[in-house]
Image (cartoon, rainbow, N blue to C red; front, side, top):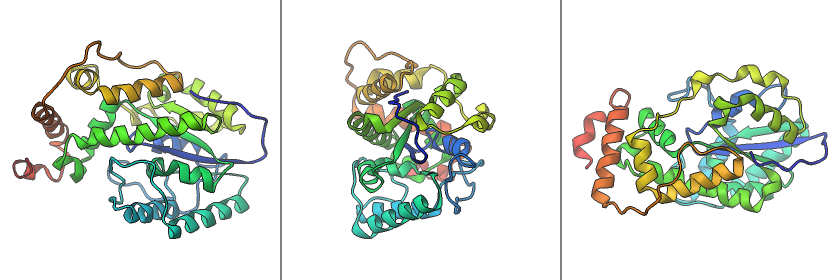
Length: 296
């Protein structure tokens, strides 16, 4: 966990971000409430997250507008990072932040797509702290496949590329703004939740005693070390490099070590592996499953 402690403050502005399916909703569920006001227009639970997303609808609209202006789908599945807000979205973001500051001394919100706009938010809310969550790449890829997103059904390898984009953005931002960032490896929420919450409480300088009881380990799972984990370890050096650097920044222990030698794999073999993975993981959940033969 990357922390730089400051003097106790009477106010707190917190932005929670990270790649989709990485534990940001879990963090939102733990933090939203008496300690930190996450907004009064939280979105409902839905497909892929029965416990709720803990996302404020106004913040959602700001990011959807910004993504559309950048020519990206509203979900934010892209290989483009460090995007900028169009003027209308920036004005909305500034107005929303000012409103939250007036209404509460401890406020924040959670939004995965904010990962693509971290520099924008750092400028709009200069006092904000950033809680950035990452998760092992194989677990995120598998979770996206099981959720059945059409984007990844058509392009299975794209799931890992989006993971790389988001987590590279976290890495670059946190390296430049260490004093404002706290990085959490989602695995730590399962293996050492008490230590995480104690450190987080010290960093935020607010009472989080009531948070511990909200953590439900069954909400999170991880792939056992097997062929899929080993495939990424051996044939996806970029993803492994980003993952290992984030582990180092967060102070967590990586689930696996990098492959010692460089291994070249053809695009055809890589595509075949991810397509088989996607097919088997999403077979029971994916509404697009019947289109498999038409999307090669």
